Amino acid sequence: MSSPTNDLRPLNSDFDDAAALAAAVVRLLVERRAMLMLAEGSTGGLLGHLLTMAPGSSVAFLGGVIAYGNRLKELIGVPKETIEKEGAVSAPAAQAMAEAARCWSGADLALSVTGIAGPGGGTPGKPVGLTFIALAGKDGSTVEEHRFDGDRDAIKMKSAMAGLAMLHRLLAAKG
Amino acid sequence: MSSPTNDLRPLNSDFDDAAALAAAVVRLLVERRAMLMLAEGSTGGLLGHLLTMAPGSSVAFLGGVIAYGNRLKELIGVPKETIEKEGAVSAPAAQAMAEAARCWSGADLALSVTGIAGPGGGTPGKPVGLTFIALAGKDGSTVEEHRFDGDRDAIKMKSAMAGLAMLHRLLAAKG
View 1 (cartoon, one colour):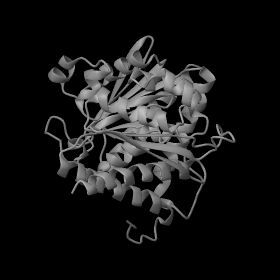
View 2: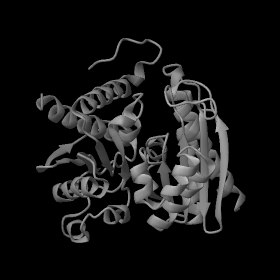
View 3: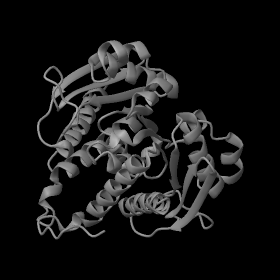
């Protein structure tokens, strides 16, 4: 996963790793003939940017919704009650986002990310860095809970990386 | 607009410039109490990523659609006939994307980008780098045509930068 040594941009290595993982995900999606949809909360478009760095990604990447506020979540079909009852940063909200994004778009797979990237917005129960990532397919959805540290940029990048890793594991396991 | 000299990451300067411009756009949106929506074609999420790097951007950034394939363009209300007749990379398609994204989301402003990031997909009439950027508000929409050079990454970054500059000009002029 590590990128080749490039002394000219040492601080880019996290980004380069994520881009390499995104390219591997695109290759697996193409092999499996699966179309992917995103519902990006706290990553804000970063996952889409990483996936579309790979030339030819349009074969496997349908697109996404950057559901930054709650309105877009509701427009694609996330139940208002789920967000009101559980909060937008919760396992049920992440699963509802992935399932709604898949149904709304007609994609085979949908990945969602919802979290608190900070620096504001944290509470004792839901601190900055808390992130839920869900993956929906035809057999339902699974969700992961993460607590990432670092600043806003680092939390966004770690969230994107974890989402790509979840996709890669699923696609690689399908063998 | 140039970022402070940072010898550790010289190759990041375009990205840093774009992030600084995105932060300035967010500040102007907050001042003007305007909510922004994106319809990202060839930028693939990069604009959303740049805008959400700014802490507190959720006050002014409603979200976006990464309309990478045509299906999502149609789902938000871009007329199928516009894409069939003019092509997805055209001035009318860019304007229809911005107007549809604004109506669908209820945002005050919507910015769209549609272009050919390459390396494939170019034709003599519509070469790699051709990009249309449109901005829709309550009084209608305006569109710009650009021809960017460079590789896929460079074309995405120049497209995002041009979109942010268009937004910044509009918001700064509103004084």
